[in-house]
Each structure stands twice: as C-alpha cells, then as structure tokens.
Length: 275
Image (cartoon, rainbow, N blue to C red):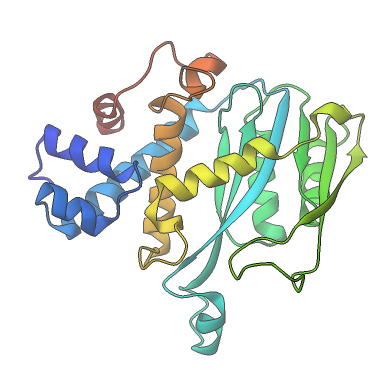
C-alpha cells in the first residue's frame, strides 16, 4: 500500500466506488488484491473519521431512515449451524437520508436489533439541530429509539407496506411480492402526511447495491471481514456525499446542503484523509 503513488491510489479508489470487485480492480490496474484491500480499508477508516467531523450541526427538515441487509463470510443460517455467529452472518447498515438535499448525515453498520437501532438514532440526534420530520418502516425498535433520543421534539411517522402472499401465482423466484396497500401511521408529533415516505432512502439502498460489490446479491463478492465491510460503507458515503454528482440535484449532496462549496475529486478526498 505504501508503495502506491498518488495516481495509482486514485485509480484503485475510483474503481472501488464504482462497484468493481477487488479482483476486477486487480485485473484492471495490475495491483495485487491484498494491496488494494489494505488501501481500501485505510481510506475507508479515514472517510469514516472525515464524515464524523463534517456531519455536525445540520438542519434536516425531512429525514428518511431504513436498513439494508448484507452478510459477512456466510449467511446467518450457515453461521448459526457452524457456531460462528460472532464473526460471520447477517449484517445490516442503518441509513438516514435528508429528503431535500439527499445528504446522508449518518449510518451505522451492525445488527438489526434494539441496541444497534438506539446507537444509530442517538448518533443522528447528535448531528442535527432542528426539529425534523422522520419517516421509517414498521421495524418496531424505531419508535422507542426515536422517542428516547428526541423526546417530543420530533414529528415521526411510520410507513407500513402490506404485500400480497408470497405464494401468489405468477411470482418469480427472485421477484418481490405485489404491494397491496401502503399505510401511513403518525406516531409522535404532527407529521405532514404528504411527506411520509421512504422512497429516497430505499433508492439509496439501490445505489449502495450498485456501487458496492459487497452488497450485490448472488455473487461471491461479499465481505469476508466485518472491519472491511464497515470501511467500504464509509468510503461509499464519503464519495456519495462529497464527490458523486447527484443526477437530480446536478451537484453533490454536500453542496446542496451547504457543507461544501465545490465538487470534490477522489484526489482531494485522499489528500484530506491523509492530513
């Protein structure tokens, strides 16, 4: 990793954030996969620290929260059978997105359970200064976690989607069931019903699956270590917030939110985390 010059490091990171696997980057650049892995982890950890410093004192009127599934090493069923759930198995990334600027102020890599939900929501609360409207799905720990973090200083609603039975005729093996109805349930405060939605955060989930090979289904590109997985997620969000131009906004989310006054380059990102 230390032998790579600036151009080589930029090439590797640019390839990784565009959804290429470690081995495909190795084939494209001629750089050994172990070196690519170490560089990705180092840069990802630096991006995590950079985002932690930058995402402070934010004003986010409308927030959408969701979690996206992935796994490390092997799926949960296999890890449980082999008694390796401490190091392998299911891993969820909790994501918050500002519906206006499309900024991702925080995320959390962990398990889909009460403790991790509280850690995620508490982190979000510490980063924003206004009274937000928050929308989540019907995952039960969200309500208590949001009430615990925000008290009554929040307008919170849940979006509950009702799907048809998975046994419906005509449903393909990998096709999702048909959504029958969508219920909006105000939970705290007075949320605006017109803005009770999780569409943006669900679209961000798609972006994550497209831009990180570790999240692509039905491949062997899944993460082998939790630390590497977390570093890849941090790299993705730093690139998404600061470098990647959002097609609708025609600028980066950080610019739309007023955090940055220009579009960052991969080179600038690498220089910033090296200082």
